[in-house]
Image (tube, rainbow, N blue to C red):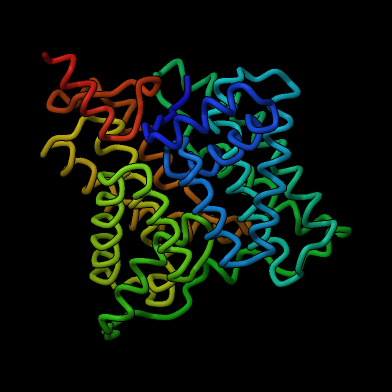
Length: 353
């Protein structure tokens, strides 16, 4: 069992129908839907916008991500993964994110090399098998694997790269995770605050620039206005909370303390749990807690040279969904029934009638 989303747009429906009848278009749709699944939807328009954001931030990162995603999609088809799961992008999005992380942490500034393409391909293959494994295990608890496979892949491949001499590794993740500056009594301008807010969006794609953040937000809005609003609220709130806690300003500015918050908000509010005032406050409180979780994980992950990645939101989402029986005031949505919040709300309303 795995989480998926279906977006009901006229042009998307026509594209999906064409892809159903053509293997080449089907593969392209699987790839684009995989990028869309970064924001929990299989909308190819969202996927295109996310790819544009990746390449705008860095051609090297974009190529690495695309190679990993293509390899993962091919491997999924070859080994016989259920076609629906592939077409929904469920075996692609983790690989796309792993490719971005590998370029950033293992081969920064090197350009497009054979070592980069090889390691990204390895990451893509590993994501396929971990996706299947985690999905099989977590389905017993009616919980999706989300981005857990790519987080584990980076946890393995990045520290391991430091001992693989033929890869020509140029850096470790350590400088990226260490406290870059103190934020004690540091002043903030309005421009800096909104830079941090948009970099929270960009960091989902392992970038730190406002334009990529705009691409991400547009991609989310192309699938769901509710998801877009949830992402904005969580990004603003997590930035304010990080400033209040006086976390390092440099880290806040590039979005390190906010991207997990907006992802968790999008998973829980209107998707994992039906939209309500209670589920909103439940989601935003847990989203804010990811700020602290990021600071904690950055500290314990630094010695082995591993990135925090999406571990905070993934682990908190899994436990928040697994603990559903204790939350009597919330309406749990089974992962196989996930869609964009609008379609879920419409279906619940139809059932109530």
